Length: 259
Ligand SMILES: Cc1cc2nc3c(=O)[nH]c(=O)nc-3n(C[C@H](O)[C@H](O)[C@H](O)COP(=O)(O)OP(=O)(O)OC[C@H]3O[C@@H](n4cnc5c(N)ncnc54)[C@H](O)[C@@H]3O)c2cc1C
Image (cartoon, rainbow, N blue to C red; front, top):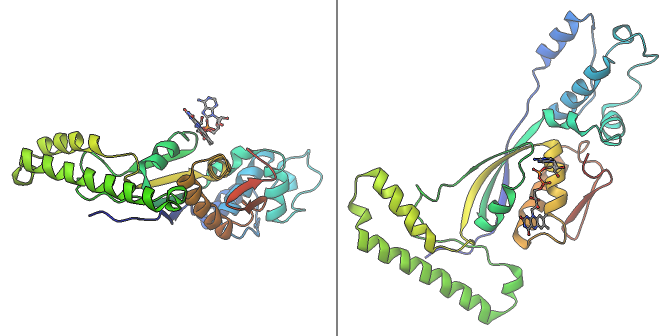
């Protein structure tokens, strides 16, 4: 019998800077000793990319410049990049989360975000669903009779799948192609609430937009839970890039929305 589960986001990867290569490249341009005080590689890369636009690593690189290096990395990013809505510079760094125990309600909505994202989701064709885990929405948890209906529906879905397993004899098959086709046929009986997992990569420009859209009070309950988790982790790890984000009652908004 499947379980009631709660979604959880794991930050599993992020962009890393090769600092030696960066120094080497600048040296070839005649810049010796440029350094950023950015706290993360994403901060440093954002500043590097931004400064490459005006060649503002050094006054000698752009004779139109009268001064360079007047701002710390945090002010450069929040005021110079984000405040001026030069959000494309934030696209150089990405973060990958493994979003676990999220329903297909959530994943179907997440994959609508195309710009700056990548997804790899549990395959409903390859992975059997004999046990169906579900997130019980708080909206239903308040009604004991509704919870019983929810649990009964899950049990019945599992009983139906078990019957199809028995009828088709899939357990004894060795033909993987046939097993895949049957597994895909079985899954049509399963509700959207089935918990599964998805690896989701986004660049920081995309994450800022997605967080704002999906933690909104107008967004769906479960997606607000998982994107709230993502937002808290990103703010903790990248305090500069998410410095203008404020969260209240699960809703996260940005002083500079959609950069
Ligand atoms: C509360 C809520 C309710 C929703 N209800 C529905 C619904 O009832 N039905 C439904 O179908 N969808 C619904 N959606 C999904 C919504 O319409 C978007 O498809 C989804 O949020 C993806 O966001 P996005 O369009 O900003 O795309 P992203 O891929 O996140 O793109 C980010 C931004 O890049 C730009 N961009 C991206 N792609 C293009 C492009 N091809 N051309 C030009 N500019 C582009 C846009 O400015 C876009 O906002 C809902 C979303 C929310 C948050």
